[in-house]
Image (cartoon, rainbow, N blue to C red; front, side, top):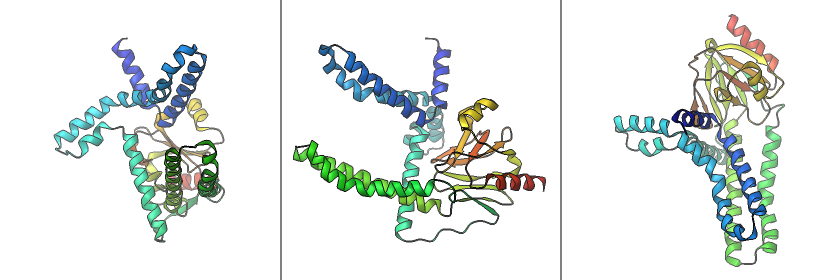
Length: 301
């Protein structure tokens, strides 16, 4: 295969999100299970290890596609003699971001336990995104699911697992999963706080807990519009690549789009990863018309 073709595929893999990779991994798993069921009886046992390995192949491919970027980061760390950064330079930025996100959620959970007060909002006009959204309902459902999972596991697992050692291990795994879910849900709720973005003199401050944070200067916003469809459809209609967009919404479908200027210096933290080179940012706010009018008014002023 020519090097240019490999480079094209590597570039495409680098632009795909990890959510897309999870979809490909799920499809790979289904295809492997179907292959095992359709294979002759003599080959089914030999295909069993493939079921565990096949879903990992998309993630391995994406990790290898990031190797040119990792090599540049590694050289920069070696030149700066930043030896502790050498290991993280070889890892995908999304994995490092996930670790940062997990640490932030745990920090938020400890702040919730200590009943630490929320930090004051900066000066400016606030635009909420929790009053009419589904975030609070989803948080309540997640808490109920995590709390009811433990008694359900205690009742149902002994009906299917008879080995005492395996049963204790499964109980431990289920309890760990439920506790981690509680930590993330309560930590995220504390970090989200009052749930609002703030339009000030310096620009639009985005604050969605540990998920999305940063300030977009007013001069970097070319336009602000309301939207009704899906972000993917909007990108196709306007010819914008998906990897140059950012979805800053807690859980709801975005209803506002910020179109950024060409080569804007905007730098936002999203899921623990610094995002630059963006063309647009999709937002959900409770009153999108007020945000659009306020931004246009601020730009005219």
